[in-house]
Image (cartoon, rainbow, N blue to C red):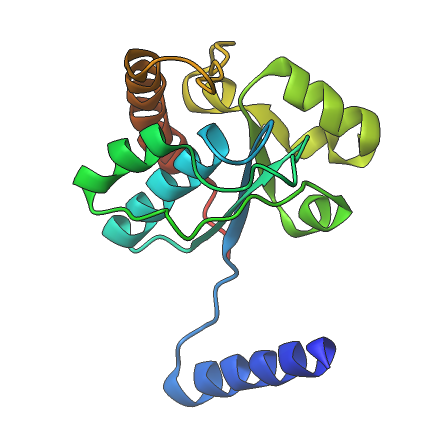
Length: 178
């Protein structure tokens, strides 16, 4: 059923492109990954989605966990608080596990720490050319985004500030696909 829907969608896109003179452009697909997908990766994806909307970029964003806890899948309250003034509501977000489908889907995979990269590459060595430390891709530095889970609000503020500075830099560097 899903294959039929994708084929129908592709046919509609092709028809629109042919009849309007618009050429379909393939979106750049990126994944943000952290430990539980309730904090850093979710926040990165939300900030990236905001940037995509503001710049009308042809990018698709997802976020995932390398170590999903099925009993902790809702957003961390401090990140909800920090995103709210930007008009971003992540309250409906539910964490999802990183898997082979994410490797196949993504053009680029951005991790918060070297441990996340190592975990992905141990399980999916074929992803090697796609996986980057977020700061490495954004600024050519090897700075890890520390986990704020269980820390005080001031620590969340610092992590959020770091992500809010890195995401626009990362988004500007993304390749434009045709």
